Every structure is written in structure tokens, then in C-alpha cells.
Image (tube, rainbow, N blue to C red):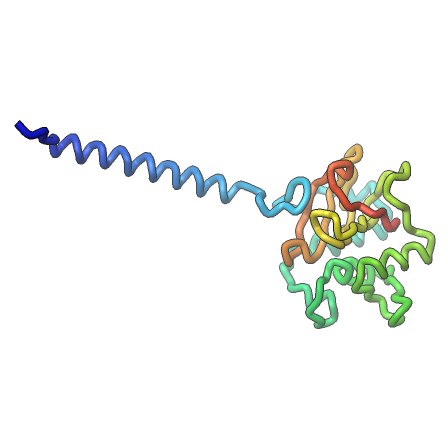
Length: 198
């Protein structure tokens, strides 16, 4: 007698298989929504950190307020680069400093905007506000971190929002072509060149 399958049992096996596949798809979708896979270094934060403005100078407080507005705006990089299509991390830093009345001075163009990370480092060095990485220095709110091309960001600059016992919360433009916030341990990030002090 041929081996005949029970039609009810076949339907049940098919239904169970379908439910297992559906459960895996839902679990994978939930993981994807909650996973910070686009973090460039450390952890990507999905909300602006709480900053105690009473502990900041007025200039630091103004800078944090400006940075929060720009993080919320979602504006394109061309806003910070005066309409120019280019890598805009240094433009983002320059723009925010200009907004709070603490503009940079570009030695090549005499503009407030310094579009290049290396030129920004030269600027900090020229005004004696550059601290090479590896010295005994704890970055503060408003300082910038300058990175070489060997970093997870490539050649880059971003701004310190908080320093929690050496763990830094940073905000930067042109991180995955947007403004992003990361929490990093500098000892675990390759390519940090130094800090521009605020």
C-alpha cells in the first residue's frame, strides 16, 4: 500500500512552518529598527543628550543650543557649506561657531568657513588651541575632535557634547551624510589626531 500523507497533517505542518518564518521575519524587523548598525564609531544615539546648561559657560550653552537645533533640522550639508557640494564636517563646525559669534578665520580665504579638516587643524595650531592626542587632556563641551583618514569616519571633525569620565558624546556633520550623535571611548577609536579647544 503506498505511503499516503494525511491532508490535515500536511496543512498543519505547512501552517507551523509559515508561523516560524513569520516569527523570524518579525524578530528580524524589530532587531533592524532598534539596531544602531549605522554607528560609525562607538554607539549611535537616537536622541539629543540632556546637557546641564548651568554647568556651561554662556558660549558653551549657546553652542549646544545651536547644535541641537541643527541636529533636529535635518538640513542638507550645502547649508553649512554656503551652497557648495563637498564633504561638510568642517563646514558644520565652522557654521555653528559662526552662529554663536565665535567665527573661525580661514587663512586662505579670510572667511569664517574652514571647509577642510587639515586647514582647521592648522587654524587651531596657529591660535594655540590644538592639543595632540595622547597628552593628558580631558576634552570639554565645545571642543572639536580631529581625525585622520585612518579613523572609522575617515578624515573628519566633530564636536564634544559631553565628557562622562572619559567617555565622549560627540555631534558631527557629514556622518553618513547627516548630523549624527555618537558616544565613544577615544581609546577604542583609531585615527584621533587631537583636539581643538573651545
